[in-house]
Image 1 (cartoon, rainbow, N blue to C red):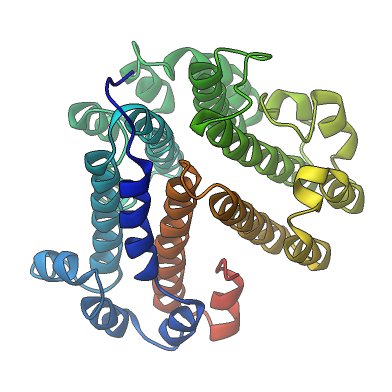
Image 2: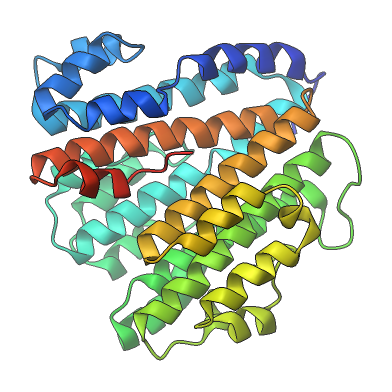
Length: 355
């Protein structure tokens, strides 16, 4: 742990300023009507100006937008680390390891689909802790088993090795992706709380853990519905992530395949039901997997915002900002890709998380 006092008031003041510059839902609706070159020009008039200008000589179109988004995202999260001191620094740095998981999933998917390394690299977000040389070695592999061997000595090697057996049996990436999620969240909770039953009841760690529990709960809900919709003969308990408050393994297994019961289960939990009435309404109205997943993302954003407003001097405001910044990048990326492949405006809007 870092020594010294935390400085949440200073960091949260900086975060509020950054949050004010995020794209609005109206901005997304403007972008939907633009082509990739117009989107890049729009971004040049915003806080993405530096990235667009620096990368504009080497890239164009969607590639320019992608690289600019990911570079900007990494820069913002590096700033968070630079601003924070003491315990707050530790909490933020540990959470940003989620981008190691993002990058590993992206590389594994790329290998699975025979995507060119340069195309995989476009989607990587350099905000985690994996070294550049490790990322480069992973991009040089053309076999998932070889990629796992590159990770020997990291916390991801053992869970991926175990999950690889099921991947070989099913041909589905879900076991590998969920092994990464489980390792990230369960390690993070153990680091912060010291293990089940030892969770702090107050202070920054308590709000941090409450936020992580919500992420785990909503990821478990997403996994339950994905498994139900996939029709695959897979054991739901295999994809259960421990540490949330909404499900245990048996409940998750019971709710797979029963959409209405799944939403009711979320609504009946006081932690979420009392704070997420609007988001739960969107969950009930969702009539497709993508709509349900976007409604879950919106619910998590709403919940994080609620925590940050109730506890303004905690780490919650920083975590809420990280989610909001991720949403901006994912929305702009979805619009640019949608325009590139010729989706109409309604189809693109369905791909967005708009509150």
